[in-house]
Length: 133
Image 1 (cartoon, rainbow, N blue to C red):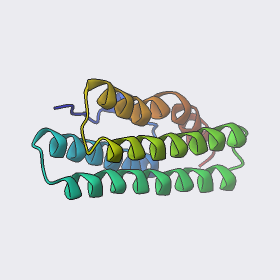
Image 2 (cartoon, rainbow, N blue to C red):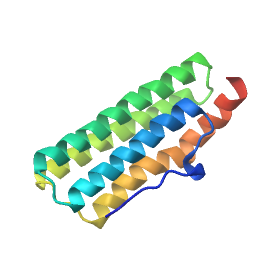
Image 3 (cartoon, rainbow, N blue to C red):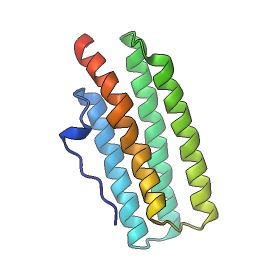
Image 4 (cartoon, helix red, strand yellow):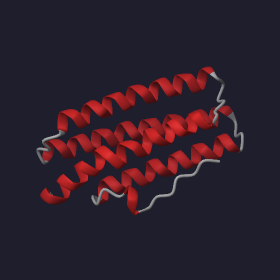
Protein backbone atom coordinates (compact mmCIF):
# COMPACT_ATOMS: atom_id res chain seq x y z
CA UNK A 1 0.00 0.00 0.00
CA UNK A 2 1.19 3.49 -0.80
CA UNK A 3 0.81 5.90 2.11
CA UNK A 4 1.68 9.58 2.18
CA UNK A 5 2.70 11.15 5.45
CA UNK A 6 1.95 14.79 6.10
CA UNK A 7 5.00 16.54 7.48
CA UNK A 8 6.64 19.94 7.38
CA UNK A 9 8.15 19.30 3.93
CA UNK A 10 4.63 19.58 2.50
CA UNK A 11 3.77 22.72 4.47
CA UNK A 12 3.53 25.97 2.52
CA UNK A 13 3.32 27.92 5.82
CA UNK A 14 -0.21 29.18 5.11
CA UNK A 15 -2.62 27.42 7.47
CA UNK A 16 -5.69 27.40 5.27
CA UNK A 17 -3.76 25.95 2.31
CA UNK A 18 -2.00 23.43 4.54
CA UNK A 19 -5.39 22.30 5.86
CA UNK A 20 -6.56 21.65 2.30
CA UNK A 21 -3.36 19.76 1.50
CA UNK A 22 -3.71 17.60 4.63
CA UNK A 23 -7.21 16.63 3.51
CA UNK A 24 -5.94 15.74 0.04
CA UNK A 25 -3.19 13.55 1.55
CA UNK A 26 -5.81 11.89 3.76
CA UNK A 27 -8.01 11.15 0.73
CA UNK A 28 -5.02 9.77 -1.19
CA UNK A 29 -4.36 7.40 1.72
CA UNK A 30 -8.01 6.35 1.96
CA UNK A 31 -7.97 5.60 -1.77
CA UNK A 32 -4.70 3.69 -1.50
CA UNK A 33 -6.06 1.55 1.35
CA UNK A 34 -9.29 0.93 -0.55
CA UNK A 35 -7.34 -0.36 -3.56
CA UNK A 36 -4.99 -2.43 -1.39
CA UNK A 37 -7.87 -3.98 0.56
CA UNK A 38 -9.86 -4.54 -2.63
CA UNK A 39 -12.84 -2.63 -1.31
CA UNK A 40 -15.93 -2.62 -3.53
CA UNK A 41 -15.32 -0.91 -6.88
CA UNK A 42 -18.09 1.62 -6.26
CA UNK A 43 -16.42 2.69 -3.00
CA UNK A 44 -13.00 3.07 -4.64
CA UNK A 45 -14.55 5.09 -7.47
CA UNK A 46 -16.34 7.31 -4.93
CA UNK A 47 -13.11 7.98 -3.04
CA UNK A 48 -11.22 8.79 -6.24
CA UNK A 49 -14.05 11.08 -7.30
CA UNK A 50 -13.92 12.82 -3.91
CA UNK A 51 -10.15 13.24 -4.18
CA UNK A 52 -10.50 14.88 -7.57
CA UNK A 53 -13.47 17.03 -6.51
CA UNK A 54 -11.64 18.23 -3.39
CA UNK A 55 -8.58 18.99 -5.47
CA UNK A 56 -10.65 21.11 -7.86
CA UNK A 57 -12.21 22.94 -4.90
CA UNK A 58 -8.76 23.46 -3.40
CA UNK A 59 -7.42 24.88 -6.66
CA UNK A 60 -10.26 27.41 -6.74
CA UNK A 61 -9.48 28.27 -3.12
CA UNK A 62 -5.84 28.97 -4.01
CA UNK A 63 -6.89 30.97 -7.06
CA UNK A 64 -9.18 33.12 -4.92
CA UNK A 65 -6.28 33.84 -2.54
CA UNK A 66 -3.99 34.63 -5.48
CA UNK A 67 -6.52 37.13 -6.83
CA UNK A 68 -7.15 38.72 -3.44
CA UNK A 69 -3.45 39.24 -2.76
CA UNK A 70 -2.49 40.07 -6.36
CA UNK A 71 -0.10 37.13 -6.80
CA UNK A 72 2.22 37.90 -9.75
CA UNK A 73 2.43 34.23 -10.76
CA UNK A 74 -1.35 33.79 -11.02
CA UNK A 75 -1.58 32.99 -14.74
CA UNK A 76 1.09 30.30 -14.68
CA UNK A 77 -0.19 28.78 -11.45
CA UNK A 78 -3.77 28.68 -12.74
CA UNK A 79 -2.57 27.12 -16.01
CA UNK A 80 -0.89 24.37 -13.99
CA UNK A 81 -4.12 23.84 -12.05
CA UNK A 82 -6.01 23.50 -15.32
CA UNK A 83 -3.47 20.96 -16.63
CA UNK A 84 -3.66 18.97 -13.39
CA UNK A 85 -7.45 18.86 -13.50
CA UNK A 86 -7.30 17.62 -17.09
CA UNK A 87 -4.73 14.96 -16.22
CA UNK A 88 -6.84 13.88 -13.22
CA UNK A 89 -9.83 13.39 -15.50
CA UNK A 90 -7.69 11.30 -17.85
CA UNK A 91 -6.39 9.24 -14.93
CA UNK A 92 -9.93 8.66 -13.66
CA UNK A 93 -11.08 7.61 -17.12
CA UNK A 94 -8.18 5.15 -17.41
CA UNK A 95 -8.88 3.84 -13.92
CA UNK A 96 -12.53 3.17 -14.80
CA UNK A 97 -11.62 1.58 -18.15
CA UNK A 98 -9.24 -0.81 -16.38
CA UNK A 99 -11.93 -1.72 -13.87
CA UNK A 100 -10.04 -0.28 -10.93
CA UNK A 101 -6.79 -2.12 -11.56
CA UNK A 102 -3.75 -0.15 -10.44
CA UNK A 103 -0.06 -0.89 -10.53
CA UNK A 104 2.93 0.87 -8.95
CA UNK A 105 3.26 3.21 -11.92
CA UNK A 106 -0.34 4.36 -11.39
CA UNK A 107 0.35 5.06 -7.72
CA UNK A 108 3.59 6.84 -8.63
CA UNK A 109 1.65 9.02 -11.04
CA UNK A 110 -1.08 9.82 -8.52
CA UNK A 111 1.44 10.58 -5.76
CA UNK A 112 3.45 12.85 -8.06
CA UNK A 113 0.26 14.51 -9.27
CA UNK A 114 -0.54 15.41 -5.66
CA UNK A 115 2.83 16.17 -4.09
CA UNK A 116 4.72 17.52 -7.09
CA UNK A 117 2.49 20.56 -7.36
CA UNK A 118 2.70 21.24 -3.62
CA UNK A 119 6.48 20.92 -3.44
CA UNK A 120 7.22 23.21 -6.37
CA UNK A 121 4.43 25.58 -7.39
CA UNK A 122 2.55 25.89 -4.09
CA UNK A 123 5.75 26.56 -2.15
CA UNK A 124 6.28 29.71 -4.23
CA UNK A 125 2.69 30.76 -3.59
CA UNK A 126 3.09 30.09 0.14
CA UNK A 127 6.19 32.28 0.29
CA UNK A 128 4.31 35.09 -1.44
CA UNK A 129 1.21 34.80 0.71
CA UNK A 130 3.20 34.60 3.94
CA UNK A 131 4.64 38.00 3.08
CA UNK A 132 1.35 39.71 2.24
CA UNK A 133 -1.32 38.16 4.45
